Image (cartoon, rainbow, N blue to C red; front, side, top):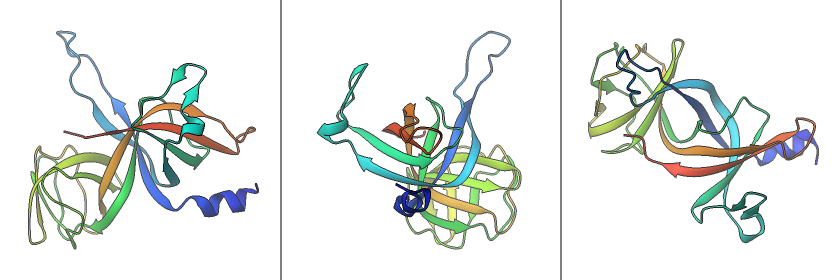
Length: 182
């Protein structure tokens, strides 16, 4: 299959996040902060079928999903967050803020995971509630975001494995398991 034909199959877009953790002075490892690795990567996700549920390492979990993308820096443990609905900020959001004002709240409600992306990077947040164009967050923002920067409702999957399926860097097959970000 040509690269052009393969690219036409990648119908969705996703953000790739990687855990950033460091032990404190007491050597306790806190919950990871998810740092943006790549933004709006073309992907295609498919439910696991019986034909690809067996691997050399054994049977995959029944709720696994298979994803395909062009070659990226994707590693086991990363999150592939597929964009469900995307909007933009209409007011600046400073680090430490617990709310956002967006153009549209389509696809957003309590418990929804949102990916914020902008010139300073990106982060994952969880929605506490929505009222009009205001989005309340469960935890304060770690970064700052300007007017017009993107906010997307996403479905996140943890990468369990990466296979260079097409050979010679053609495309990657990802073994994914859906996760909920808290």
